[in-house]
Amino acid sequence: MKESYFPYPHLIAALDEYYGIKSKPLSAFLEGKDKKPRRKKKTKQKPGQKKLSILLTTFWDYPHTGGLSNYITTLKEGLKSMGHKVDVIAPSQFSPKKVQKLREAIVPELKTFFERRYGSSTSKIIQNSRLLYIYEQMISSVKVEKYDILHAQDLFTANILGRLNEGIGKPLLFTPHGMFTFSRVKFNRIEAGSAEEVYYKKMEEKAIDYATHMVILSDSFREPLSSLGAKPKKLTTIHTGIEFKELKRKDRNEKVVIACIARLGPRKGHTHLFKALSMIKRIGQAEVWIVGDGEMRETLEAEAKSLKLSNVKFLGKREDIPAILSKTDIFVLPTVNDNLPISIIEAMHSGAAVLTTDCGGIKEIVHHNQTGLVVEPGHVGQLTTQLQRLLGDEALRKKLGGEAYDYAKKHLTREAMVGRVEELYYNLLDSEGV
Image 1 (cartoon, rainbow, N blue to C red):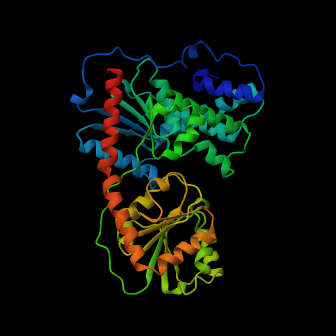
Image 2: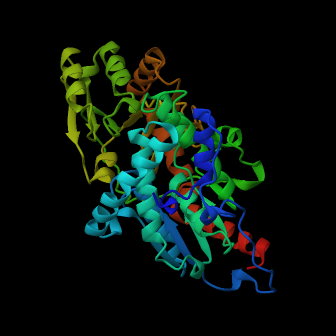
Image 3: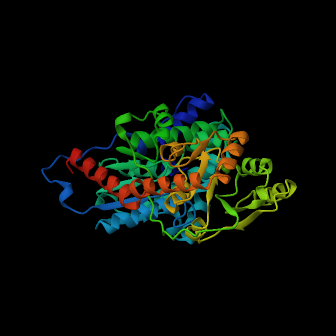
């Protein structure tokens, strides 16, 4: 195998330790490739006087549906509105024919490499190594040095940009949109104590090491990132801001509308919501809209039917979220594992009363009894009590919705988020004198 197919010595060293073998050098090709980037000599130029050229990278398809894609679009468009030049590089932009050709060449080589070195290979590591190789081949054709700022939106492109940035010394930012390894172990997508856990954890550690600075979406990232080696001075919390198409709220004289807008997956807690609804007397006086789609749709439809929740309506994936929220009295997100969901921010901008859980950074923007109501994740009793409270108190709904609206307009706009990101970019360039 051409050892340049897998030029990530830190990953090999971690797997060598896991498998209990003495590390072997990969080749002279890799010598010095795992060192810190050399910083350019400082100059007297003040970067705040010029507009910037910025590269955003993602390991996932873009544009796509979901919070990550929305975040990238908001950041890109916000920065461009300020006069900066912004490029986004994503796998979906590459030629499918070239990707297939590279895949056919690399997969057998990777299998041979891992099987000869460790006596076995795992599909997850092979797949990720293949994707790393293909993405790096593509992005290597880009002149990274022409950008003032490199900003990776995941641990994988942080590793790739980190390698390409060696010897260039551009400010490299890393924004994690979730704790990759921890979450996958927690939800049994990676086995605890496995080679995959070692592999991905090392990638997270190296992404943190490569990064000049990290933009985190909530303070809830601080502790887990610190456990992976992040220094507090390298972490800046900037809450997600959005551009929300505000519609006038509809005054309704009939049923109270409860909406849950989320992917229909196990993390979002729909089952807890249905159990809570089944415990509330006269719940039939409300309409419940389940907005979104996902792998649990059939299961959830059957559960709602078994609980005789005839007022629960599955609306599927929708593109008119602002219109739905303008008719919503109570927005509920009973998530059991999250960071800072865009759907909550949208609901706050709409003026709906928010009821959600203490997950990730949610409590940093949904302040209990002020900008919403917060319960413990998975606690059906608390969810039932607070939902019943909102159903029976229109004045409370309006108070919470109004305060949420005011907070969102002040702190959770595109301008607020992008302004802070731009300031951070300039500060990093100033501190490095480039």
